[in-house]
Length: 273
Image 1 (cartoon, rainbow, N blue to C red):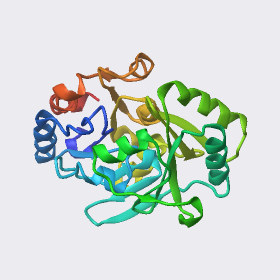
Image 2: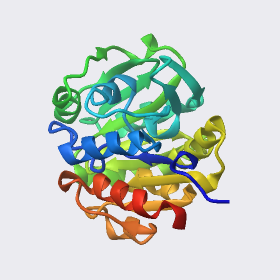
Image 3: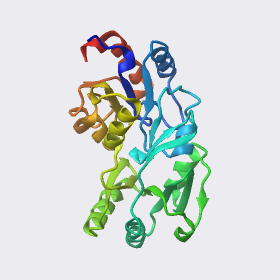
Image 4: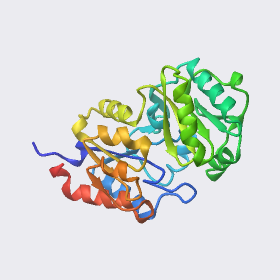
């Protein structure tokens, strides 16, 4: 049976893929997403960003399906303004991780994503940059004042310290969590089994699509499971080589409209996927 564009969902990472923080969505990508939707295609995002951080850029590009947020911990329907599926860090394991990191790396920054808020329990220059680039509102508080349902922890520290922090935390053997690098100076703590790939599978189910209708675009290590889970995967030109080799296709750079280039290709060739 011949397939239509409506049989696919294109899920794109945000930072380094669809947009650049502080710059926004390239005009080529804006036009291409709008044209893709007008032709019947469905497009959404899968990002490490929390609800308010992702929302800031959704005025620049129209998504036509629920979004994957917090690296897969949350599937959120912005049209209905409600969560569709949530995964939380196990407690008290998450608090053990937080305490271990702060004790071993005194200058670390630490943010906790919970509900629609960002809580900063340890500030540094990198957390300040992270929140100020996108003019994010956040709450500085002690961990005891934060509600239980944490989507993730974000640690911010100099690039040379990210891998040592990861190694230190892994050596603690704290059950129910894992660690993923999401930027040069970011390490995130996620619930075990929760990632963009799992969320892509769940999103397809919510939309009534099979996995053969899933297409993923990404550029970094937190996109890897999503690229592997998708029926067809696309890496950005700037992605690390060990990410690009996992993809079915490599598209152009972010700021040159790499997402737009792929959407144009897809509209011409979707019957062959």
